[in-house]
Length: 304
Image 1 (cartoon, helix red, strand yellow):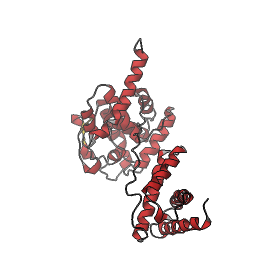
Image 2 (spheres, rainbow, N blue to C red; image 1 turned 120 degrees about the vertical axis):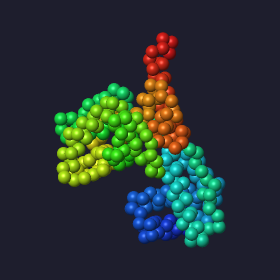
Image 3 (cartoon, helix red, strand yellow; image 1 turned 60 degrees about the horizontal axis):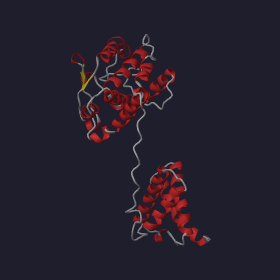
Image 4 (cartoon, rainbow, N blue to C red; image 1 turned 90 degrees about the vertical axis):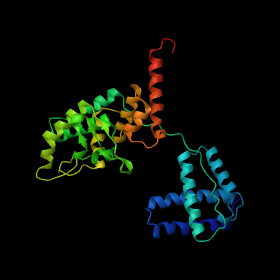
């Protein structure tokens, strides 16, 4: 049984911390409420186990709390948020010199299995690319954008920042700047080149009017297209195509990588094309590709 005095000892410091989050860090109401909820849940558990206050909580008490919640079926992301809340809270107590040791110092959660990215089938890519009305200015621009993204695996940030001097279409290459301002050279197929050249010749000058811009893809006002603009246009195109999947601009990048692997590309080549510094980042696509191979095997092998 938890007495009121014990609960009060916990709640006072929680309230101090929440006030600090509002006054010193300017966090939004919902964020502060999330911290408060996590800390109240932890406080109730610790008080029930006879711990007098936050200073009495040790690493084993925190591990017991996590095990208890896991046994209740709490999702891993919920446990991760709780640990994060406790870390922030104990860091605050530490700065106020209210405890000798940090019970969160040696507490870690096992890494969760990486979620496989959503990928479009080749047929779905075809459906998506067929949506823009290419007899209209913005429709032709969007068709050129989706073709370039699927043909090269560009990140959306790389697409919106792509400049005219990074296009080397006469030799079938583009040279975007990726994360960490790293340059890479990517081949671009003839189909994408054809759509891109049509956009550059027929549409971009109309969007630009009398303005100047170094960027390839422009909005209706002749200014640099934003990531949000790309997202919004893609979302509408996915809906129009009747594709029932959570598609983002990154999905075209995932689809680019997966389809290359499914058609026999080497993982190191895909790593280079995607601009991944570490091949372990690229390896997630091998899992997607294996799913495809298993599906093909199960469908066509006579004894599958």
